[in-house]
Amino acid sequence: QVQLVESGGGLVQPGGSLRLSCAASGRIFSINTMAWYRQAPGKERELVAGITGGGTTNYADSVKGRFTISRARNTVWLQMNNLKTEDTAVYYCNAKSNSGTLYWGQGTQVTVSS
Image 1 (cartoon, rainbow, N blue to C red):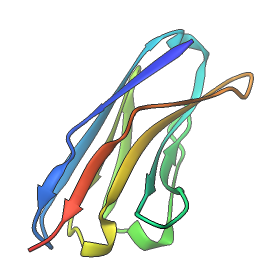
Image 2 (image 1 turned 120 degrees about the horizontal axis):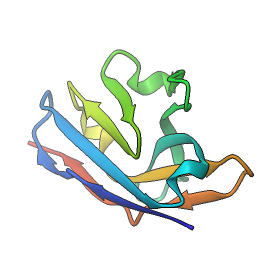
Image 3 (image 1 turned 90 degrees about the vertical axis):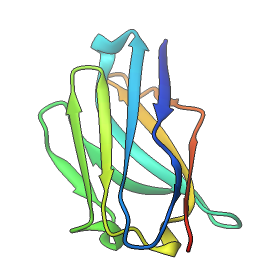
Image 4 (image 1 turned 90 degrees about the horizontal axis):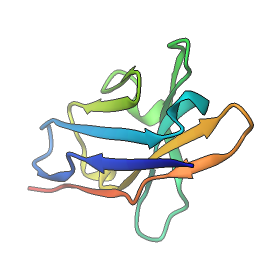
């Protein structure tokens, strides 16, 4: 089992920045890819950014150039700059094991509003 705990969400004005953190514990040696997803009210959960064990990253088009995902051992971060109101959502940390098992954090709220 893998446990994921997110932190760093909050309220920020448009144009501001936030940094989300996700710490993994448990069978961390089994983790391959880690990622951030988000879900806005009334919308489906969507991939924001992902990073493999080798450091390869991918981003949703809507956040390219504004968000940066990084990873060190059992922690993954999401640096979010130039935030927009449409970035408001609950952000979830995700980990995928080498066997394909998916793990999710409890989510952290990000609200972008003036």
